[in-house]
Length: 342
Ligand SMILES: [Zn+2]
Ligand SMILES: [Zn+2]
Image (cartoon, rainbow, N blue to C red; front, side, top):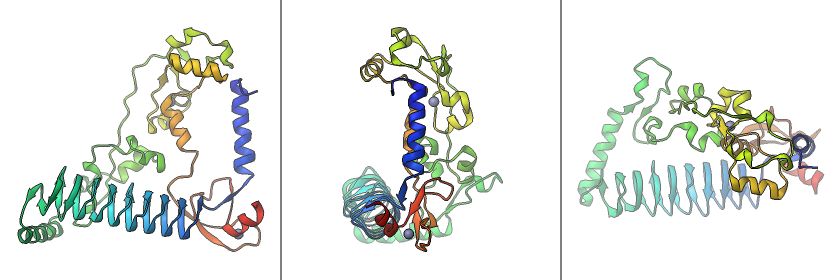
C-alpha cells in the first residue's frame, strides 16, 4: 500500500487527521516533574518556560539541558552545574555568566571556548588558569580591581547595536555588563543555526530583532527533472535517476518560504539512497534533504509557550503549553488527560 507516492501522501494526511488532530493531547510532554512548565521536561523540579530538560532544578528559560543543572536561567545546552546565566553549551560550571562552550569554569564572565577557568573575564580558549582578563593573567588583587573598572566602564560606555544610529530597522539593544554577546558579533546567521528549527522566523523579523540573516544565494543548479515527473513507485525507477538533478517541490511551490530553511532548490539521488529505497519499497522523495530535515523538525512543537485553558468541557484548568491556540489539536490538562486516556 505504501509503495505508491500518492498513497503515501494520503496515508500521512490521514495520520495527521486521525492521530494528531482528533486525538487528545496532554498540554505538555513530561514525567516525574514537580512544578514545571514547558515542553519535553522530565525528572525536574521548579523548571519553567523551558524546553527539553532532564533532571533540572530551579531553572527558567532553559533549552536542551539539565542533568543536575540547578539555579540557572537563560541557558542553552547547559548541564551538570549551577548558578549559570546567559550561557550556551557550558557544563560542570558554577557562577558562569554570558559564556559560550566550555566546562569546569567557575566565577567567570564572557568566556568563549574556555575549560577550567576560574575567576576570569573576557577570555578565549583559556585552559586551567585563573584571574585572567582578555587572556592575560593577573594576581588576585589586580584582577578584582581591573574587573570592577571594566564593569563600571561597560555601564558608562556600553556597546550599542550600530544600526541604532543609522535609523534603520534595529534591535535597539544596549549591551552593558549583564548582557550576552551582541547577536551581530555571532559568526553565524540566525537561519543557519538550530534557532531556526526551534523558533522559525523570516528575514524581516530577523532584521527587526537584530539577528544576522544568510541571504541564501540561489544555487546555479539547472534541474533536469521536476519533482512532479518522478514515478509513483520505486519499481518504475532505474539507475538513470542517478544522473538527474531534481527540482525540489518546496522551492517550486514557494521559493521565498523555502529559502528561509535553506532549501537547495534541487537535489540528486545517490546510489546508496536508491538501493535503500528499492530495498524497502519506498517511493522517491520529492523534496531536497534540507527541506526534508526542516519539515521533520517542525513535527515537534516549537520552544514557545502560550497560556491556554483546558479544552475539556467544564474544566477550568489553565496551563502554559507549546500548542499555540491556532493549532488544531485537542489539548487537555493533566487531570482530564489522565481520566480520558488511561
Ligand atoms: Zn528543498
Ligand atoms: Zn482539564
